[in-house]
Length: 327
Ligand code: NDP
Figure (cartoon, protein in one colour):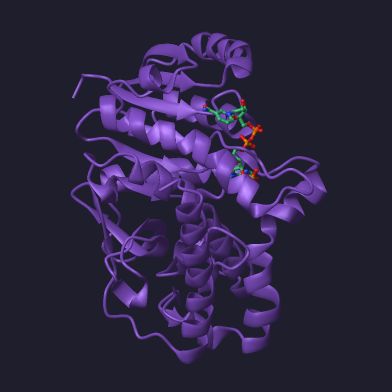
């Protein structure tokens, strides 16, 4: 197709936005044959910086970049959007209660959901990156009753990629040798990176490592990687987060390979005992532009406990936003 695809990015002037926009414009989000029009959404204070980023995008002379528009009004920002990357969010400041954080984000993601409902294209696909991503995605989805619920997703691909990399370095195999790893649950410290169905060069991953490495090294390292990067870099993990967002949307649109799966937080159909309607991370494949949950995996008692703990946190977040009247 030569008709440009409209890609809306919120929080466009932020760190992740800066790492993301150039890759979208270069064709890495949708492929080398698809021109894109960028719609950058910011809060009013962010517009000037977004204009600066747009100047740099112009200066890259990307052949696939068919235009850039900048907005501070969600209704305009999501007009005609085919893909929406919701990156801008209210960060948790020191001493902020969870209820305050959820309320602040409800004020962002509720109106964005309404704007998507009102004006996005029929094929709109939404990825929420801004935290708490799963619950922000739920809020947006609940404000977009005319959009199929499964079009709202949240990002656990960075957790998935971190887990791949940790397992590769432990086993000495390249990441390309690892298949069928899963992140379950919430994009938070309770997430569960599951290697029991994963293979490394065709061998069961869990049999290549010992349980103590799994429990006291692998799982906490993956869950706390974001904090370790802030500690080392003095800034948060923006480039790897942007990379994971690209991976998520690219796979959603173009499909995943048959011989493996990936992880994404998508609306639950009740699979694996995850309450229907929650936006939770699952083992997924993409086919024909849709995510499908990989079915029939045997879940050990150890895994069950970890999945339940993370899913329970999602239930609590959902109940909290319900109580605040945000969904
Ligand atoms: P970043 O671009 O670094 O991060 C944006 C969001 O992504 C945060 O909520 C952050 O959560 C989340 N995130 C998810 N995964 C990761 C990860 N692996 N590493 C780091 N962050 C991750 O934030 P900035 O402050 O640089 O930029 C935010 C921009 O959004 C600002 O320009 C602001 O003006 C804008 N904004 C726009 C809104 C809108 O368009 N309506 C609304 C609110 C803000 P966490 O904080 O938990 O790390």
